[in-house]
Length: 300
Image (tube, rainbow, N blue to C red; front, side, top):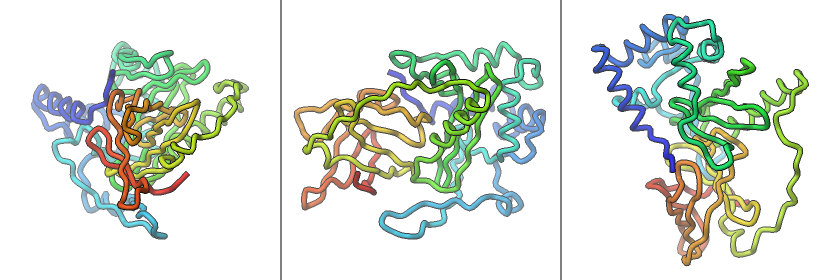
């Protein structure tokens, strides 16, 4: 099974630095950001940049007001997610990706290789390219990537064939808005262009068994994202908001002999054990999986 790795991207950044002989930040600025005119993007949060930054917020469980999120310096993991940017700059980046005549930064051959799936889910519903997540919706394949850090969740996706993209930047974590907004943007585009992306099949919902209802709800992870435990098509499912990049991605979980333990069957958590935690009164208050704890926020 394929599993996403932030560390792998951080290591790639170190490879770029050692091969080029210059710091990763400088290499990206000189060879990508400046040539594409992405003047509002970079890695170092100077005082001048921070004055222009949106304020990130982190919701608190059972509280009406969120906390202001810190701006952590992830240092050696810069290549995995330290870039600040704007919608205008990211639009330039997407425009470069879908413009077959623009080879100012990368050759068309290299861009095509970036868009070639290296791993596919069963049924080719989703996959992963060298830098992009790939999702197939109807007759179209969308490529993109999301990001999450304290107080911020982001997502960009594009269709290289139709040369259209969507960018969503939010200054709060613990929500699941990004993927639905991206999909809504593409839906509006498809409606305007008289194109159909989503299928019209409707599945009949089935009642959740009483013994499984106790697990349903919204959970907050230590990384600031939201996860949902739902019941669909006869099994509990895990929906990962910050990293799935696909609002329709419901990952089935297989029960075990322990009623509080399930095995996740897809995405980067494939094969991982998910164990629900209870308080002294026996109420489900969270879960632990793949080394990450999650706290239950909202009951279904």
